[in-house]
Length: 296
Ligand code: A3P
Image (tube, rainbow, N blue to C red; front, top):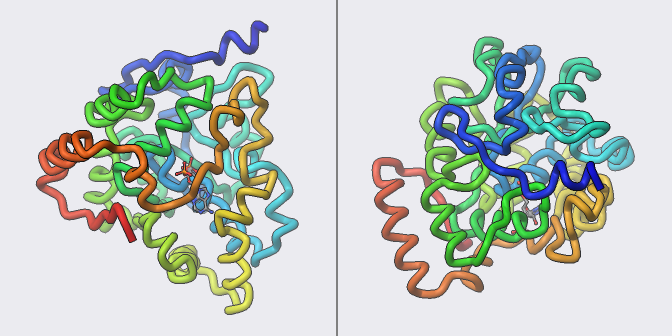
């Protein structure tokens, strides 16, 4: 009961202008002081943009497409989630990292200005995956319904407004995608799009392979594409988050591997909501030209 209470519907707390889950805000000093090894790889995303998918592709590339090797542990253990703080005995991201030897693959949802400076100082490779705003929002909405450690999403209409105002955990989607976009050349960030991965997974897996300085045979590439399809990952217990107990991720509300599609926003947004959202989007994204696609 006690453990359950301590993770239930956490509050958000401001960290340098970004709302983060309260336990993360409370551990902020040690999180921002984390110093990676130059060989570590960072996978950064706004929540629900395709993090787990990117992680699985990377792990398979690093293991030559060996499916069994990539089932050695659940995603969160294979690739520690840098800033996550869970109630004991569940290890925090920093604890997991301290037990692993580099090169490590590290996950973060931090906006670029909050990423610990050591990643830039040590010139770590960074892969950023972005997803179009409306699908990202829909996915986050269902995730916030089922992830009982996150604040309650409330009704759909209010959630759309919260997203537009950047009032969800990890803050503004708009600032997040723009921040990494602006820095991508100078910091050698590989900037990927969920929609591109969906449209032509082979091309995107190959792009990741080249960025990592790897070269895998064509057959292995095909195998990785197969193993990282939504259908296969949905049934992979080491990649589908079913290892998180139901008191935290209530999969009866919505499964973690929900739809895995581009354009699901059309089944959620009313015409009025679309109009309001698109107008605001133009305002918030006006100065940038990130090639997002909300359909393929
Ligand atoms: P939906 O809720 O739209 O289904 P993250 O890993 O960043 O939390 O993102 C989760 C979203 O990515 C979910 O979106 C999930 O279904 C989708 N996803 C996970 N693996 C996928 C895959 N192999 N192909 C397509 N989408 C995938």
